[in-house]
Image (cartoon, rainbow, N blue to C red; front, side, top):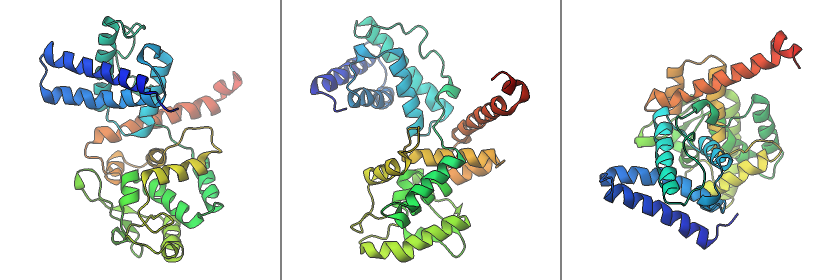
Length: 304
């Protein structure tokens, strides 16, 4: 949906009023107010993109926002708690001002992390995405893109920014540069190596490259995030889940843990500075275990 100017300005004005309240009435520091603004900016942006006026925000729609956010980015438990706190304070203020009609007493009191787990794909769903890419209009490029996101677990910014010089096909290593300009080593599996080599040697030269980025668009230029998003949407439209480029990184982490990988090793592969960010995937793993138990335990099955 395209937000109307009225909705956009009204939601933004409400946020600005709350930030002013924090500065004038509560005397918070500019740095603290900026952190609130950063948290709330995502929320207000989501409202505007979906043409939702704050007064129309039901608890169900708020739940949609939190679930959507969990699927787009990685948040440590500390970051999740901070976002909940920012939202709770904003909504309580709006309620007092008569701009929000729902009770906030039972809302966002405590982050229920397990309820907002990042979306991830099953192994069968990942296989179906690779199959779709292999049968698409640009199979070599699209397969290489998905290999970097899923098989190497790269962030979308790393996937689109990685250079040929950061790929060592002979020794089967990638050296992406992640957050904080930190470089790490990520091993390449044999299938990923094969597909990346095919793109680099057979498909990529046909674009007449103007950049040494591995992933390029049809004009030989670095692919944009929107370009990658469209490719992901094309090859996941047969799935019932909402999938973003980041979903493949979530799937990589989840499948590694399911297979028994040590959490510290996964932290290194993902490039997390703090292991608390990696630990969100242990929650996913527990959810997977519960689902498997419900599906296969005899007493669970007998109740179907």
